[in-house]
Length: 192
Image 1 (cartoon, rainbow, N blue to C red):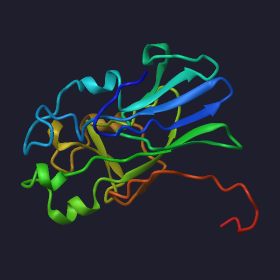
Image 2 (image 1 turned 90 degrees about the vertical axis):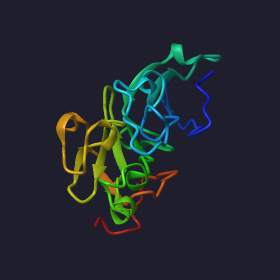
Image 3 (image 1 turned 30 degrees about the vertical axis):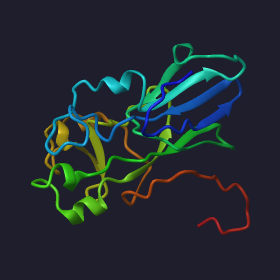
């Protein structure tokens, strides 16, 4: 049995040998003290990270497991609905549903236009111990770097503690909410 929430209920899976990787999404937008309340600061540390907002690894051959039977493989991932192993590399990849409402929650720091463009939906390579920084950080497509979230003191330019967060391979446009990904291993198209 895995944590149930009203938000981000999908539990995407990927299997490699006896490893069963499971996305357990965050139940919130940014781990705010008062959920989706204008100007509410973030909880620090964010208690959701103990059981959510990451990828857990379980045994693929053991039935009836609970979350305690698994181990957190990667963290700081708000919700990875698109989760897949690269068939040639046996390497885990995901596309993250990023946070929302930069302008709605912090209108003095972000414009409506910035809210439409930020943050990136991140395409990531997930390795054991990865930490992509959510909820403290988000990827800014304009600067190409992780920035400190406003709930944790950021104002749209500060990197701060996000300097250590794992970076995405690609930052896609905001709010696309990618739900799947596929690796092309054929030869029909030119290499480029």
